[in-house]
Image 1 (cartoon, rainbow over the protein chains, first blue to last red):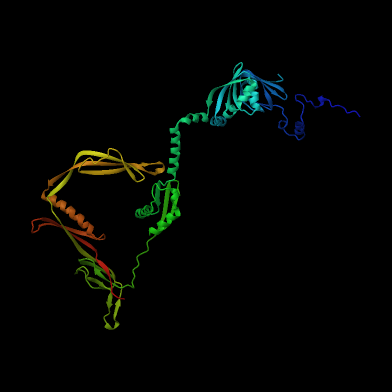
Image 2 (image 1 turned 180 degrees about the vertical axis):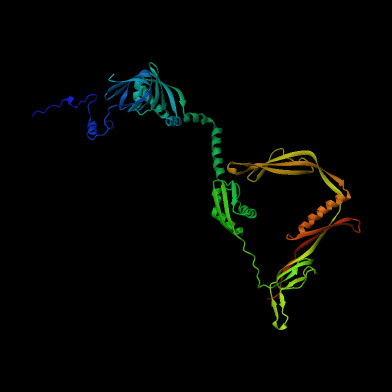
Length: 105
Length: 397
């Protein structure tokens, strides 16, 4: 009996990356999906501050734009007077007057 | 956010400029747990950022790896602030000295409060404390409140209970006084009443015993007034002894004579003064330079200036100012009236010491006379009314 190869597309859901075991478990037990896995979580508070968690690193940092590498692609935050308020290995807080948050840019 | 800033300030941080390959540098730092914050682009290849002191120490390999040059712009925070004093020995010595003084002064008694008794009992308690060298300035470590309380109980007789608490630099002694027991007349001890001084009897109140005098009698000192020996009219019944009680009020006379002096040395202040100042610390008096006995004959008045600290606490540090007034002695010739008035004043002063405290002054007579030698004297006679009865125990039982 020939094993049918799983199509990679089956696990894909629109707008999400490949689900890891942890994420599947989280879905199974109806836990918040950000507890497991390393998908980025972007929290924008007002207009002056964006918190991005589960990052891989900073790709580019300019006065009007910062690009952050994550597991689900690159997040680009544009605005004016962009600063990095704080950075650790997992998260970054971007300050400044923010006008766009773009994915895969 | 304020707390974070404060924490950073306490720990110390540096503001640095990184030049070339900033993104890579930031990523490496983030991965190596070097905390960076407030990163802002300065121009196309450099950025300004803040890093903790500890982080900055670990930053060198990261910078080398990313090929980024780092320059310190400013050092902020307490470690740098105190680093400035590292070489100032006097400052450090002062700090240590202050700490020692603080500890020393807070381990002393600075105030003693006595509660729950009158002034004289309080003074006796203070005396007890003084005898044991306890006072302002004694160290708390050497004091045992229970022991002090026991000492007070043992040595001050009208105290029924004493509690000693030491709170901070204040020692509070609270005492409970004893109600003195009433004087008990021991009626089994027989006695007579006799006159304590000469006098003219004005009133007799006898509670027990047989009166031997009547109103209007004059009595001499030691004369029997009320007998404690009751003789019955029928000699067969014998004699009964009692404890004689009663008040025998009599008029008594006191006299004194003082010479009348017509010459009097008057002290007149010349108007020249000098002030001596002393510093008092814990009962010690330290004279300031410039203190001297400025005049040969002088009156001095000294007063204490005390500092009242917070909470109305008296601080045992103060100034004593002694003011010297120069005086000149001048012999003054008095008129007869002035001389007599002066002598009368002296006589009154002398008599007031002699009078018993419970007597009532009825009359006062003054006469001036000359003795054989020609000296002039002033005699003051005071007429009083008082109880002259005094107890005299009867021999045997």
